Image 1 (cartoon, rainbow, N blue to C red):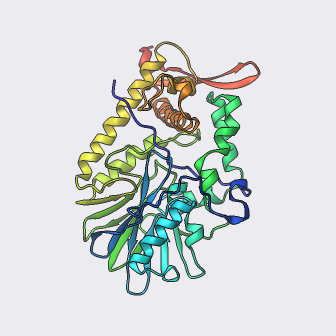
Image 2 (cartoon, rainbow, N blue to C red):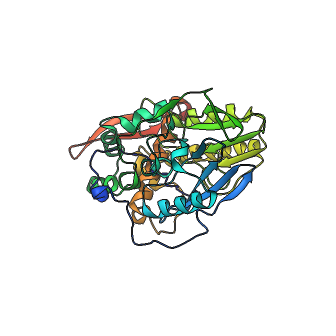
Image 3 (cartoon, one colour):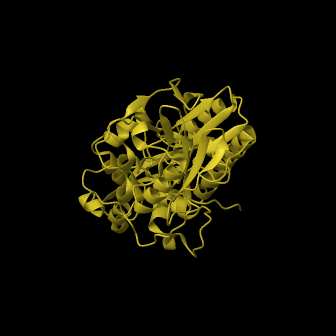
Length: 371
């Protein structure tokens, strides 16, 4: 059976106090490699440069930050995490491009820490930070991280590891300093930079309001984590009132209608065959949903148990030996697929009590059993 890589996207779990960021210092985990290939500008098209901002310890390896140089103001799209390695690479790239931060605005495709985290250390008094409304609301909301904890506990994440999973989450360690002031975007909003006219295209799924930038004249899409060339975006379902996979598939369908010959993604290489990649991503999620259904044929299970019996591209002998963060993201993705199947009436959930703990068990629905 085909295996899949769990990708750590650094979902933001804002909390007022971050002991790891005491006195406002950037985190440095001791693995600072002076890798000057990171942050070395590569001109993709005229006036648009890609900076690879390193993400040490993450299977993503780096985030693509795009710098659009303009006559009066510049625009930086996504920033990296709030850690020293990211800041060093960003500063090196901007210095080579002779970009002044007071003359620069930021567009953040979505609120995950590997895209948003560093912006709080780059923004100046003259800076605008563009972020879609749904994601901005989550960044600034109270109690957002607690909802993750409740969901993880309900779906079977081990109690004795839950606290460590939340406290060691990269978003907790490397998210932005708060508060931040956002200029909120909406679908259809126009942003002009460097002679390009971009239309904001809301593509929810990977996050609540994930937004791409589309330039129709140049047939170019800056896709964030909506479409990636070599890896599949992680679609996590921590909230019962939201069906992220259904939203993501709808977003793929609407994106496929665009005339695009160049996609600038948030990670790895640029791509040209957007529609072909969209079809691959749709098939990927069909296979994952089918695998989750297959796992449930042997009886009702928590989402954590379902995840433990699915295939992941991690070199460990058992799911229990996976790194804590990877089990967290595996659970989130599994819940996302189960919610999608639930809406299709292919699975159903039931609430049970086990040793004083409330759990959600999943079992095949009527459409699978034929009853």
